[in-house]
Length: 89
Image 1: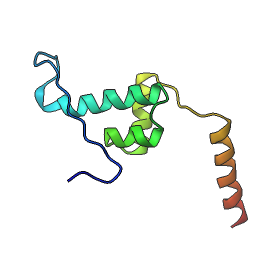
Image 2 (image 1 turned 90 degrees about the vertical axis):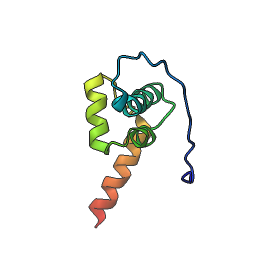
Image 3 (image 1 turned 60 degrees about the horizontal axis):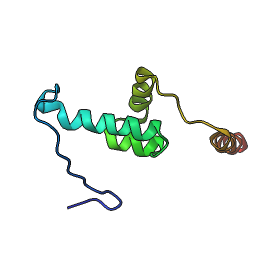
């Protein structure tokens, strides 16, 4: 049964890819997540969920792949709001 808000996609890939069969699904998930994040199609959280990695694990993966974080003024403002709320406590 599919999870709410999740869509399952089935794709066909050539049998002779140089990826061990036991690693195929994980590798495809990682590659898909990296490219979707890199192109701005998926958020950090969405891409992380595709891979099944923790937030920190996905951040490390981005660093290893040389993919910069998407962090702009909007994210900075949100982070500053969180910091201000913690300072009020």
